[in-house]
Length: 415
Image 1 (tube, rainbow, N blue to C red):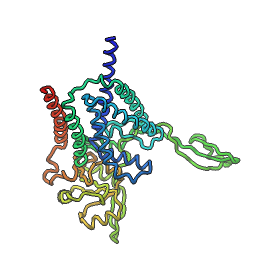
Image 2 (cartoon, helix red, strand yellow):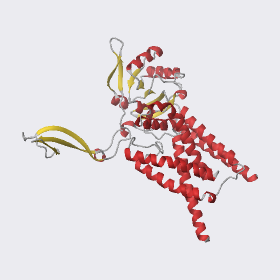
Image 3 (cartoon, one colour):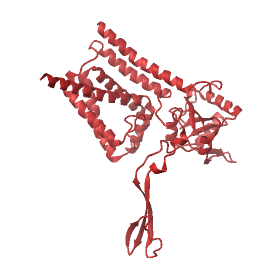
Image 4 (tube, rainbow, N blue to C red):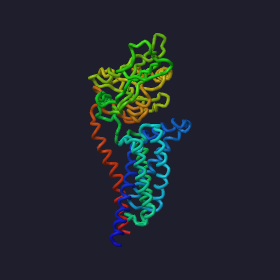
C-alpha cells in the first residue's frame, strides 16, 4: 500500500513538472516576442477570413502568453492547485482539438506554440497536447497530492507577482527589441548563408508531362515522354514534390530599389539584394514595414545616422513594404534624401520587431540592430558591443523574477 502511494505521488510530481514546465517555457518564449505571436494569430485570422479582428490580435497575444506562463509557474509552485489544474485543463480542452484541425488542414506551416525558439510540426504539436492533456487530467483528479511550495498566506502575493511579471515582461519586449532573438536575422547571423541549402538535401521534384492520344490523357516522366511521337498531343506540364527536404532558414529575402522617374513618380527598379549583402563596407538598413504606421518620434536619430553614413561613404537604405505612392507622400513630408527600397512585409517584420528599426550589416552579417528609441548617436554606433547588453538584460530579467520569489519564500517561512 505504501509503495503504491509513493508511486502515485511520483507520477503526480512528474506530471506537474512536465505540464508546468511546458506551459512556463511556451509562455516565456512567446512573451519574449509578443509581436511575433501577434503576427501568427493574424495568420490564422487570414485563413479563417476574420481579418476584421486584426486589432484584437495583439491584446489576445499578450493575454494568452501571460496566462500560459503564469499557469505553468503556479503549477510548479503548487499555488491554487485546484484552480490552476482546472484552468490548464480548459486551456488544453480548447487547444487540443484546435491543433488537430491545424494538423489536418495545415493552414500555417508552424503553429507557433513555442514561438521562434523551437519549431515543431503541426502533428508534433497535436501529439504534445495529447500528452499534456493526459497529464493534466491525472492532476485534476489528484490535485490534493500536489505539494505546494508556498503557503496560502503568501499565495495571493506570489500569484499576483507572477502575473504582473508576465505582463510587464511582454510589454517590455513589445516596445523594445526582444531580449532574446531566435530569428534568422539576429545579431551575428549571416543572411546569405541562411538563404542557401545543399541541393542534395533540398526538396526533390519531378516534372510530369500530360499528353493525349485518341481522346485519352496519359502522364509521362522526363525519361519517357513521347517528344518524338506525333500521334501524341501535348496537354500540360506539372511539377510535383517527390520528397520534402531541408528548407533554408531565410526563403524570401529580396530587396528592390525604388527610384523617381523624370516626372517625379516613384517606381520599382532592379533587384539589389546581392549588392547589399556583398558590400564589404558597413551598411545601414532602416526598416519600416509600413511608412503609414511608422512612429516618427525618433526620426531625427535616423537622420543623424543618414548624415553620418553619407559623410563616411556608408550605404543607407530605407526598406519598406509600403506602396510607391505612399513612399512619394512620406518622402515629400519628411525629406530624408535616402535610398528607398521595397521588400516583403513579412520579411521586414521578421528582421526587426520595430517600426521603424535600424540594422547595421557588413558583408551580409548582422552587426547590430536597434529599435527607434535606442538608435545610437553617430559617435556610439560602432563603439558598443551588442552582445554585452543582451547578457546583462538576461541577468537582470532572471534576478527580477527569482529574487522576489525568494523573498516571498523567506517571508513565508517567518510567518
